[in-house]
Image 1 (cartoon, protein in one colour):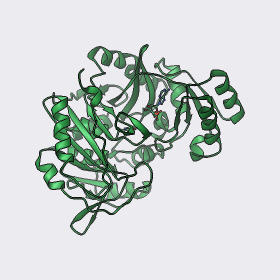
Image 2 (tube, rainbow, N blue to C red):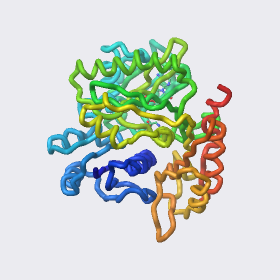
Image 3 (cartoon, rainbow, N blue to C red):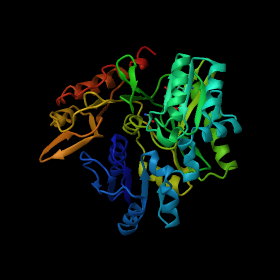
Image 4 (cartoon, protein in one colour):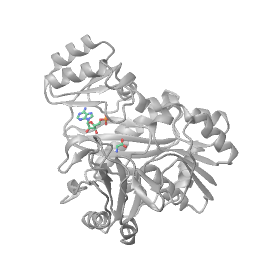
Length: 418
Ligand code: AMP
Ligand code: GLY
């Protein structure tokens, strides 16, 4: 089959890399893709109608959507109307990520454990509620805000300020509705699962590091690294999550007639009261995908095609027992301002160690790769145990240099000693 991947980051590079290794796959395209994708032909398209025309013209048998924005914009609906096979939830189903209040209501209705929350469309009512409940408390812009619309407030002042910021447009339209939520305490894990609406198949567990600094300090980013499996997800906890989150999610999709044929990602907080869902995403995580897919031994193209055709019950996924670690190398200053255009050295030496270097924000200038985004590379390696995987990933990281390059040195630290 011919496959089209939509997106341009490290997650999409990992998808391209894995899909290209399927015996069924002839050609892989990525739109818009990035400079590091050796296994795909990149096409410079982002508009949905242009993507659908491309898929028709190039006889694409399967389109796989990486990021949430095109899903929330209805790419799946558009492709299906045109008879094109695509992997992902419809626009209606994508609201589970696109609107936090929609997701909270869904969880309430179907008994999925989550933080207690209230939704507001008027600042005064929200401020009154926050004063009544007090800190710590969490303020969330309802809509998509590129991972920035969540304020975990330790003090009442920060919380009140967060509410005002949302309503004053700090997150654009996303903040016109505000969810105020109980603060949960515990360790987080990313639970990804394939579903075709009838069957749900969990992927290997993983965990990412959102904070920019070592020891999980500093501002949140898109994710500075990830590892799989997440030891916090014990077999007993996995069963509990499958029963209380995944099975109920599927039941809710059926009852609400949501056409869901794609990935559901539950961000779970493991609290003293059991697992609770922090958020749903309707796509794979980045950088979790990089750590998860290098452990997948099965044919990903077949799994995605089966999901899109509602025959997921026939699919079994096999995983390498070896843990995997992805260390994100970022431009100095990220997630704030950073310089671009510095030549990157040592990529071949890094790959010669056996690691895989997934590109996220690179550009080619002549024969050289240069940094062109905040998150630049996802250096990913496996090992016989988690410590070895970490050592293997950092050995490759240490081959790579550019001016201002930054990475955390403690990815997967929470997995040690478990
Ligand atoms: P979200 O986009 O909803 O996942 O929020 C981003 C991050 O904010 C999560 O990964 C958590 O670290 C944190 N967060 C979100 N909701 C809560 C909550 N109710 N309690 C504590 N932390 C939270
Ligand atoms: N790594 C977090 C996310 O993809 O949302």
